[in-house]
Image 1 (cartoon, one colour):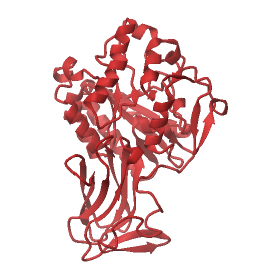
Image 2 (cartoon, one colour):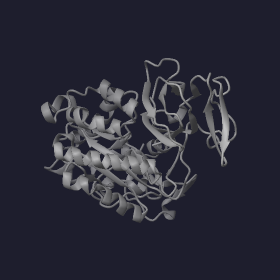
Image 3 (tube, one colour):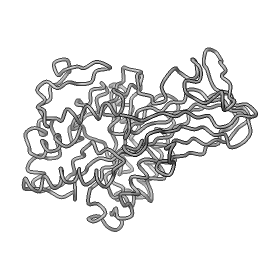
Length: 431
């Protein structure tokens, strides 16, 4: 059902707000149920505690993505929102194609690497009739949902199509486009939110509708990619976020080198506690003036109030404190440290597993998140080597929880070599 947004209920911290409380009104219709589900899946606004945030988007052409960009997203633990065509394996072939990324494989990569899937239309072609608009927007969304049953398809990413530009919609260049044109109304009937071509940095107020139609900065040009950190710093000064986009088929070796340098910088800024890296959906909900961020592992910081559902006692770990901070210490006979949880209404959300570790001797370990009843249905793992050091190092791993079929998930930290190991504050954060 479509609700007109003359005074939409918005997210503002943990309480509802209305358009009268916000800085802008919203002259477009939106689907309240889909928006509520979108917010609930992530557990509310995503507080960044004063840090700016970035998100990355890949626009189809997934053969080249698989070959060149996927390894970089894995190397630097950076999630990405993939704007997918429902017919991409049919209409895109060759170097600029997507036939090497069938939907079952795309779903597997999304679950294991924290990718979010957005509807980018059926064929990326203009639709100059009402029937064609429904084929490109509505039918495409349902087709993607059938092809990717373990992933929610909540966002629309308008394609640049030329011609009539979806009968004047023009990619959603203004907020009013989403109400004044049939394309915009179909988008907001079928999706929680949409990106577009509204210029400017992204709001970090925790109110997703303030980001409706927001645009991006293209990275598929080395000259722009080398300046990308300047865009992040400019957004920081404004207390806002920024979304970057690339077309894999337009990236050459020089572009790829520039993108990798930027990815490495973003990862180092995240490790230093100066930047958050989210999905596009996460950036919609980012709130810079809050430290509240949903954590599926829940409870007290670190192990300050005991094991809080972790198997520490049975696995023969001990809890220690140092300058008021608590951590788990591995012993000579310790086994894997783990905790189980039920995704419930958070199923389908992209999550950031963050674990801070320290070892004076150096140690190897494996971080895993998997379906407890059937790891074959869902299992993601990262092998990590920790060098000897006196300080804690944050480890980050992104994943997307299956929308269906998984009732209980286990997070497990397994030392795979001898040596001292301290573990502090494991979290599974909304991203």
